[in-house]
Amino acid sequence: MPDPQPFQVAVVDDDPAIRRLVRLLLKRGGYQSVEFGTGEEARAQLTTLQWDLAILDRRLPDMDGVVLCQQLKADPALRNRYIIMLTGEDDQEDKIQGLDLGADDYITKPFQYPELMARIRAGKRIVDLQKELVESNRRLEQLSITDGLTRLHNHRYFQDELLRAFEESARYVRPLSLAIVDLDFFKKVNDTYGHATGDEVLKTISKIFQQSIRATDLAARYGGEEFALMLPETTLNDAMAFAEKIRELVEEMRIETQAGTISATVSVGVATVPHPRIHSPKELIVAADKALYRAKKNGRNQVQAERRTDPNRGRTAKTAIDN
Image 1 (cartoon, rainbow, N blue to C red):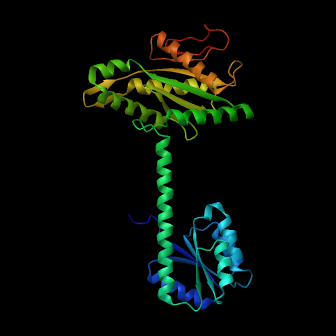
Image 2 (cartoon, rainbow, N blue to C red):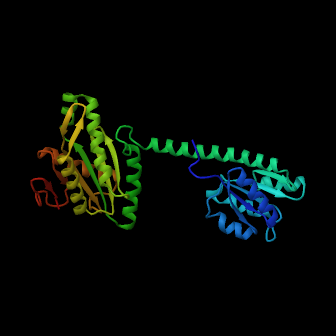
């Protein structure tokens, strides 16, 4: 697989002739390069520029190249970048010090051009392997928090994020809403058309959630045919309006499956903090779940909210808010 971006080499040397020579060698080798004549210039730029490997002269006019190397390696974002030190002195102690302070390789001037390019190629192999490892870890982490069927977040990730968001809501006294969505009569879909068709329905409904939420919201498969939508910075009324929009979208959708076109509806329970009787993420889930139970008990295909004071106030045919 080709690199998404060209391999970038930074050359830090106060000698223009060496920089020019290395630039030509790198260009022939298919690498891109940036150049700096002083340590301060390099330090200012290399923390923001994209680069993969750096060739640092040990004797810069304004600082020891080893110091620059140590400072670059101290930045967590640059820790996996590869650094080759150049020195005009074949001193073993200098090399040991440079390697101890973060250099990955050392080459003595005057250097043989084939040797320098070979060391750059060796460095590139290591950098490429590190990139592959980082990408593999990212994919594994994504898989660990994703529901395999719906591609929504899974239950464990939802619980972790709800705890974080709940604590933030309590600390700053900001609204946080939770909607629990249940697919109505889903068992009948599985019994009538089979589980493969049921899976198609779940995946289609999940896409509605993904397309409807904001970047700050979270959609997760709570379990079976239940889903959880976490809505930070969202009041109860706004959460109810959002849940009603979800309900309408599902009701209007015709789901194409291998068994033919299927219609579906959902019931939704909504709860919001701050709330006088909700003091933990678990209590927020329980409140939304109780509201969902009422939505199902009252005929399904509707949105209900957690109870606050008067349980009979504000009820409508499709949407009920108990304030």
